[in-house]
Image (cartoon, rainbow, N blue to C red; front, side, top):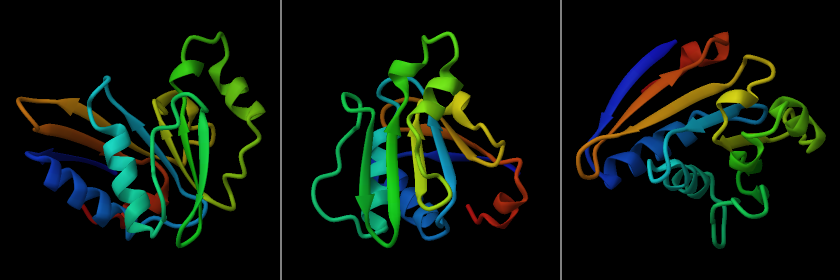
Length: 147
């Protein structure tokens, strides 16, 4: 499955996050990519809010991973500091994350789809608040996704 979505405002990005959240479930892997300031954390925050996570939701940049409880268990990971490692996949495996029993959202996540089953959302910055989202997932799970 490959789709492109043009998002013209922060409100549209929020709405996309809410719509996506309604379709996510335990065991899903969501990989967010894009340059600094593209909106990866913004999108993750709205997904987490839509899944009824309470309290402050911030980027896990300095702690690498935050775990939340909403409608189900959610791991929010920032893999930026793993990108320069010789084997980022091995470093990720050493984090010992229970992917099967939670939703896992990974910012800077392109290299970390170890099973090939993740949903990739690549965000490109446009003019002003506009963004282009390239959404892809090779696993049959994502053929059900409504964008």
